[in-house]
Every structure is written in C-alpha cells, then in structure tokens.
Amino acid sequence: MKQVTSQISVSLDGYVAAPEQSRADPLGRGGLRLHEWFFATESWRAQHGLAGGERNVDAEVVDEMTAGIGAYVMGRRMFGGGEGAWDREWTGWWGEDPPFHVPVFVLTHHPRESLVKGGTEFHFVTDGVEAALAAARAVAGDRDVAVAGGASAIRQYLAAGLLDTLWLHVVPIVLGGGTPLFGGPLDVTLDPVRVVPAPTVTHVKYRVRPGTPGSAAAGSSRTSS
Amino acid sequence: MKQVTSQISVSLDGYVAAPEQSRADPLGRGGLRLHEWFFATESWRAQHGLAGGERNVDAEVVDEMTAGIGAYVMGRRMFGGGEGAWDREWTGWWGEDPPFHVPVFVLTHHPRESLVKGGTEFHFVTDGVEAALAAARAVAGDRDVAVAGGASAIRQYLAAGLLDTLWLHVVPIVLGGGTPLFGGPLDVTLDPVRVVPAPTVTHVKYRVRPGTPGSAAAGSSRTSS
Picture 1: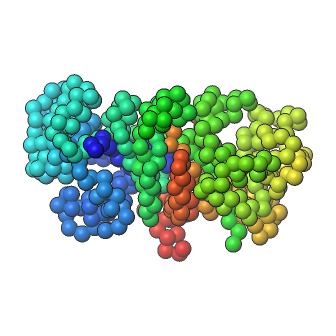
Picture 2: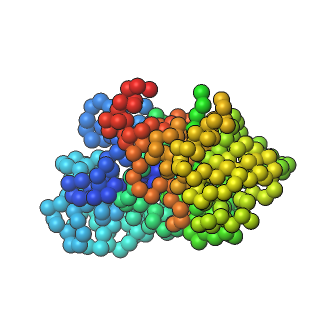
C-alpha cells in the first residue's frame, strides 16, 4: 500500500533548526547536533557515497524509512538558494550526486526548469502541495512518497491531511529557539505505532489521522480504521 | 542511592500547559489532554483514593516514578493560589487529602506557616531551590526527592545541576502555545536511559549531566561517569 511518509529530527523544545541560520550554516548555530545520530550511521554515509559508519539501531531506522521511497516532495527552503526568484547557479546543498536517486518535487512559487544532478532529477512545482504530491505519486508508482522537509512542508502536508506516517527523532537537546516544527495548533491525531530507543535519540513513528484527539473527527476516523 | 528526580508530560511542541490558563482551568484550554494517560491509570486513581483505572504500562511507569519518594519540592505556581502574598484560604488544588503523603516543600518568595492537609505536610521555603532541596533531602532520609513541577521549578533544578533524572512523557499533541517546558537554551546533556512505549504516549527517562553535548563539560562528565 502506497504511503505518504515523512521524518524529521526535533529537539526537546520542538525545533528542527537552531537560531542564526545562514547559507553557510543552514541549520543554525549548534543545529547540526540534531543530526549527529544520522550522520554517524552507515546508511547515511552509503547514501552519500561514503564508506564506514555505524551499523546500529539508528541505521536500521534510516534503512526502514528510506526503503521503498519512489519520489520525494521538498519545500523550497530545504532545497535552498534563498527567497524569491531562482538563482540558477544554486543547485541544492548536496554536491554533484544528491542522495535521493529518485525524482524530487520542490514546492516553490517561482517556476524553474527541471534539473538533473547525478542520479537525482529535481522538478519545481508551482501549483501547490496537492499538485506536487500527485506528481510524486505518479512517478513513484507502487512505491511510497516521502515529504523530505523542511518543517513548513511537513506542516502543510499534515494540515492538509495528506500524510500517513511521521517519524520523529526526538533528540534530547534544548535549542532555545530556531525553526519550530509546529508553531501553532494542529488539528491532527498522532498515534505512536512504533518506538525505537537508541543510545542518544528516541525514534517514534506516528500514524497520522485527521482531527484533534477526542474530537468528533478523530472519533469517527478511529471507528473507521 | 538517593536520587533527585522529576517527571512531566510534554506536548510535541514542548508545552506543559495550554494557552488561556486560569484558576478554573489551570492547564489551559485543552491542556488536560496532556494528562489523560495519567488520569486513566489505576495508580493515579489509587493515589487519589479512587478505585478502578487501567493496570497498563502507563500505570507501571507511574508506580516506578513514585516508588521510594520521601519528599517533594514544588514551585509556587504548581501549588497555586495566584501571585504575591498568600491568600491563606488557598490550600492547594488537591482537596482534603492531597496525593503526596510525604512532606512537600513549596518554593515561594512569600513566607507562610506550614500546612497539614490529610496525610501531607506543606512547608513554604523562601530561601531558594538549594535550601528547599536540602530540607527535602533531610526529611527524605534514604529515599529519593522528586521535583513535582511545574516547568519553572524543573528548569531551575536542571540549570542548577541538581536533577539526576527526568522522565518526559511525550504526548503526541500540538498545543500551539501555553507554558513551555524550556523556553531558552539549557546547558545540560540528557541521556535517554529507558524508553517505555505506551499506546498513546512515549515515556522516556533521561539521566541528566551538566554541560551541553559535545562541550568540554559534557566530555569530562562522560569520562568520569
């Protein structure tokens, strides 16, 4: 069954990036600490063409999350390159061979021709989250679609009721500011369906249902599931 | 070994109470959802003299957290009754037999004589977090001391390096505002030492060490532990 999934590392105070973000420091001062568990894995290193790394429970979670993904959807800010009209020189953060290796659909208000970097095609979608997801589903076929991030894209797919599962990697640090994953109330119910304890972080997989817990919408959804 | 422990339920966006708090609605609009897992347990009901309730993994966590507690420390706001000089009519939220049944030390700037309600004595401490903890330790003897809350008291004990363990009950709701558990950076390292998945929440027990992860302080603490 094709799922629409997402996953993101979040601090205990709910941030996905630290304060003082810049092109040189896209996760802000100290924000890389959110991803240390990930960068240490053999899985992450292999995706980036690197040998070595840890073969541990974190790596198993990464493998599980990335298996069977046929396309990605990504927010403009995650692709990077600043705001407004495109600087065509900017081709993403990932160098000559981005780690996706399946088509990536970038949400943007500014048209741009598709771009091929290494084994990844980037397509730029200007007609909204539903259109981007439909395009991703079409190329993914019987595989899943992942919302790669960032926080704003994940929030939009959650709010639109288009996300089926969300992995949160709860990193026990307090950033004290930065980019919040949420940033306002959200009318969804998240049921923890899997928890993977790891030495430095806690991975929790949530099933997403529409409606606030306890509300009529959540109740009817519960009945029908 | 005597430990100083604490535990609190926190939303995915890092709040321990919802917006629009009042004396009638101390956890704010929708904030009770943070504690539904707790109120449903046989353990919570028994502490409040009530029969019934669930005997589940949540109840086991509650039993584990409350076993061996010889005294509590509590912030002024958790005891309640508003700000400023004491309204002597206010004797806490908990009715005639508060659930603690061991001495409770309330942090306050306003002196007040001790108070006995049911099986619980409340003592009001005006000379700070260290003095309150020392008093609690003295009566706890070889038992643990728990910081009952709220967020401000927990933050102060964390920041002072006086907390040994912290259980966070991660409740998958998004409150969008209210009282943050943190609210600024915090120079501690939290190591997840135990994770208990439950149907609606995820319980994570952290060991607290001074120093930010990766800093010299954290490194030396790691070496000596």
